[in-house]
Each structure stands twice: as C-alpha cells, then as structure tokens.
Length: 90
Image (cartoon, rainbow, N blue to C red; front, top):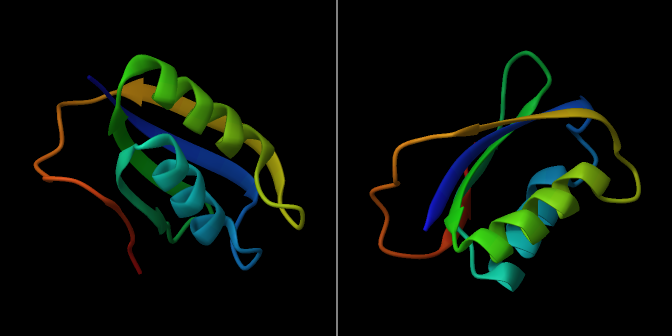
C-alpha cells in the first residue's frame, strides 16, 4: 500500500475538481479524501496499491475539462486511518 498527499495548484477550485478527484479515486479503488485549501489549491490524500495510485495521480495532473492544472506536489505520508472509501471534504 502507498499513501500520498497531493497538492494541486492552478485553476482547480470552482471547476468540479473535487468531484473529478473523487470519481477517479473510486474508479481506481483508492481511499482517502479531497478538499479545497484556503490558498486556492486542492489537497488530495489517497491510499491504494502502487499502480492504482499512479493512475490516480495521472488523473489529477489532467483534471476536469474546466480546470487548468499548473502543478502537483506529491509526498509520501503515513497510512490513513480509514477503513475504505473516498470522500469530498468541505
């Protein structure tokens, strides 16, 4: 299992990015959460097998049609304390 925190910058708020990320995570079997940050970025923390996390990360680099992703910072973090699922936080 791999657990990563991804900070996505660019035009990523008010464009459906969190719903897009949640859909991508669920499709790949990644659990965790996504939320908007006060500085305009989106934070996603996901946990899954290595291949699933790579596909999830690629999806976040693309983003939904109305977004414009300028950068994604990725860092490995401690495992999550969640049983399963992926949620959108406010």
